[in-house]
Image (tube, rainbow, N blue to C red; front, side):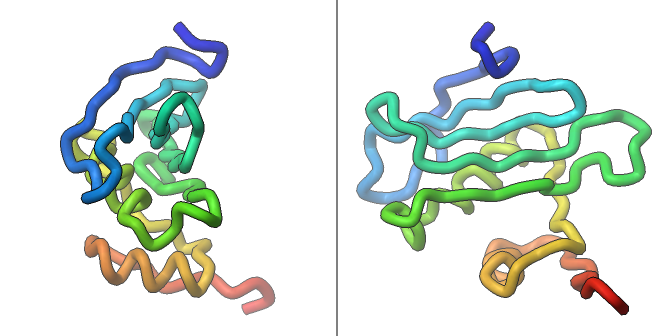
Length: 119
C-alpha cells in the first residue's frame, strides 16, 4: 500500500510509442480511483475517476492532468484505456475545458453537453 492508497500495477499494455519505460498504475482512494503514468519514478500524468458505488457520478472522470512537457504523446489516452481495462468504465464529465472536450471527442465515448457556469 502506498501513501496514496492501494497500488495496482505496473501495467505497460497500451503504452504510447516512444514511452517504453512508462508504467501505468491504479491507486484506490476513498471514493476515487487514480490512474497514474510514471516514467523512471517520475509522475507524468494522473486521471481521477469517481469510484463510489451508487453515486450519481460513479465512473465520471473527475480530473485529468498531464505534465506540460508530456502532452500530445498519448498519455491521457493510455490512462483512459488502462481505466477501461481495469473495469472503471470512465465517463466524460460535464465539466471539461476546451482542450478536454477535444480530447474526449478524439478518445471516444459519450460526451454529455458541457455545463457552463451561469447557464
